[in-house]
Image (cartoon, rainbow, N blue to C red; front, side, top):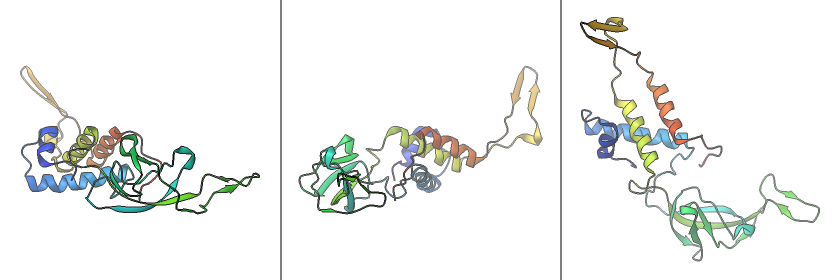
Length: 195
């Protein structure tokens, strides 16, 4: 998991919820974040090497863009360099030419965009130590929204006054609306799904 129970307690201040419920909520919250970012199953580095056939952009220094980012190591091809904070690889040679749907042959006989592909074997994704602080904070806050009890307004009262003391109650927020609001802190939802 990208956030621990200790992270949860530090970020949310919730020291009452038991560790088992917190861990379960963190796992669910990470799934919500992955779904929002359209990176289902690709956000966390699980220690596995993955092989992908990727389009090589030859005019961009042989650059490819793997799904599991940030890339932490590359085993094939051996000459590839990790660039862009781990979000791309450079120096990838072309293994074959493949036509993709939507490729167009121009009058000059060139293909647009470039239909060059290469098989890449790499390891990537975030760990609890490398995940962005904002992402970790959102995971913890979503987990908190999942486990925090909703405060009920006593006897339907809007406010209570006793002498100089007054308390005004807010209507409890729907947990789903709270989660959606927290997820929007990550920024706009990506247009492309990473499956």
